[in-house]
Amino acid sequence: MVKCYQWIADFRCIQCHAYITGESIFSGVRNRNHCPYCLWSKHLDLHQAGDRLSACKAGMQPVGLTLKKTWKKYGIHEGGELMIIHQCTGCGSISINRIAADDGAERIFEIYEGSLKSGDNNRAGLQECGVIALGPRDREIVFTRLFGLDHCCLDRVPALLCTCEDF
Image (tube, rainbow, N blue to C red; front, side, top):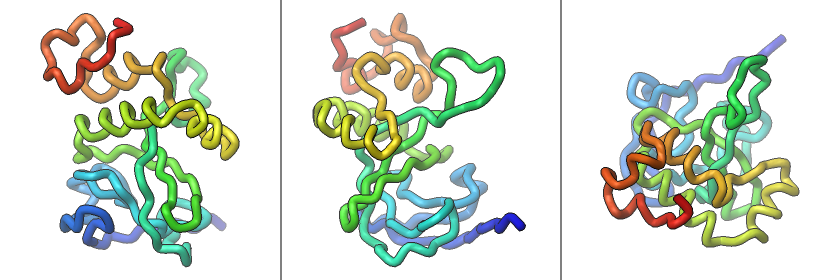
């Protein structure tokens, strides 16, 4: 028997204290688990998304981005959904979470840029947990998934986003 967990609960962000609605009509996801403004989460789930069984309850910091593994037969080379990597500030647990429709694309890109500055040691630690963090070579994939533009359009976006020199 498969258990289906769905909690529609509004909450206050553990990091920036913004009021967040849990209604899926705004977020586009069934289990809202992070703030759309600062992207922090709270360690609530233990075994599967939405179970809310974790005893930890500490803040989960967004530390990078990854691509969800996909098994689609005709998927593109860079297949998979862009996901946020969270690390618990209490117990160190790692989780990946779907990007919600109302998450700020600029803030997601800042998380990606910050993960590049944290270096290879951080990415290696995530890889030990089975999570492959996106690196410098994935900038075009991240940019295209977030903003719908490819690198030929970088001159038309805010300077904040054009920090890369490898295009």
